[in-house]
Image (cartoon, rainbow, N blue to C red; front, side, top):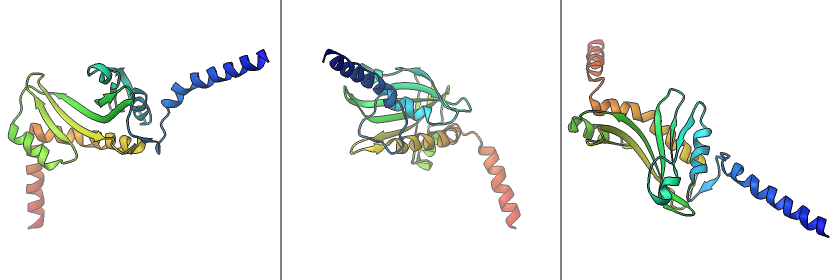
Length: 185
């Protein structure tokens, strides 16, 4: 009898020890009403060439446990931060790409925001930082695939949004517009 009890306890311990690894696995259709650090790490790991560089980078209290800095295959650095956190998890996710920037033309920053409704472009004058953010609420549930695709959207739009806010590429656009107008006539 004692051997059966010990075997059952050992099996239970093995099952409980395996759960953290399973929690980090990316399951595209898994529905999340809140996320934890393992979920954010799983999203990053599911993207080819992406890797987590540092964990627990931002926030206070529970939020400090649900944040990370990662890089994509080209070396672009981004952060994922759980927001509205409770001990059971975070019901929001902020995704950001940040760029060093000494100054900004606020008219161009506003235009970048108007032209790109899928992200928010902002400037922090104290930190000398231009940021591009996408925020998700997980109320009523979101699939892991949807969280991942929202990160893809941010990473696809961030460079263009930052260039627009900084006014970079304006001469090229004028040249293209002139060439198109010339071709039409």
